[in-house]
Image (tube, rainbow, N blue to C red; front, side):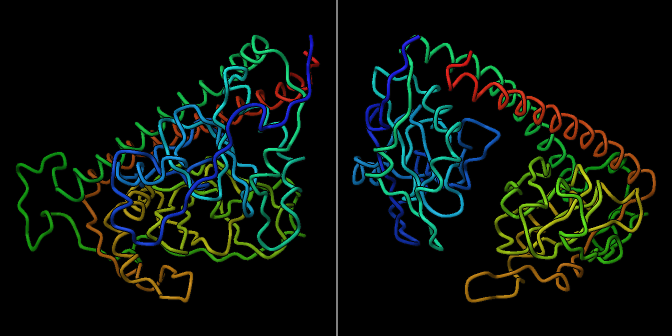
Length: 393
């Protein structure tokens, strides 16, 4: 097999993204994806369906910075250097991302795996400053050994089999989460719970229900631990591991990667990212571990309240109210737990509560199983990746 040295510039055209001016009304809310590093993760080779989109006029104005479907995106600025993804569709990225629009000699999936496999060697090129940067020229000059196109395609197709299974599991998880959200809205917002047709509403609450405050249902857990006192492979969940608007905390690092004291959490407890709460980072833990001090660890006062507490604090309504009452800071406004505790929650009759919790716990169990299945798939893919990319297989 003949592998030859090629620079990234030889694989295709490199495009640096564009970060728009804050609040530019002519830029956003269109039909094209706007991708930032937060829309990319290490467990999914396609970027996420982003929350922000770009208008057609912005595309025309910044045509040279748009990339087509299947372009390979690579974050080149800051502590996220090395995050890599394939574009879902025509997209604009922010300036933290360089994208490779591959030529006809290069397979897009192979280029993606090639960059993934070399993150450790690429990252130091950003330098040791507070905000490391790999500029476009340096990025284009990075060199790899590359096989012929037909071999590239075989490697890309083989490795993507793992990622396709991971992506399929993630779609299943998204459907499960949406079913949980819809059930919560139907029963606790629209009050269309089983038997609602024969239940009177008294002062805005169904008969037999009680109006409670969040503080009556759960409390904040503050168990501070030092990294030195824990095993190095103890799971660590920072805000960077918490996905937006997802109740599944399916990604984590290890405590050996951090130095300052953190908050301990147990399996099943709920983490709420308190910095910029409008980012909607709320979910349930699938492992024991430690969390960033910028996350609130929430524990229900009773086991049967777990589903209600989880779906309440992760609801759009609760996050919106929390964002309105957050403590303002110069750069990092934070959720105010004291205000959060005052949120009103309708507590249903025991029968309705147990039925609801049973459904939510079944969904959580499925989400947990899919999370661990994806981690095994990801580990298997990563085991094969360097051997294929080095030409050993």
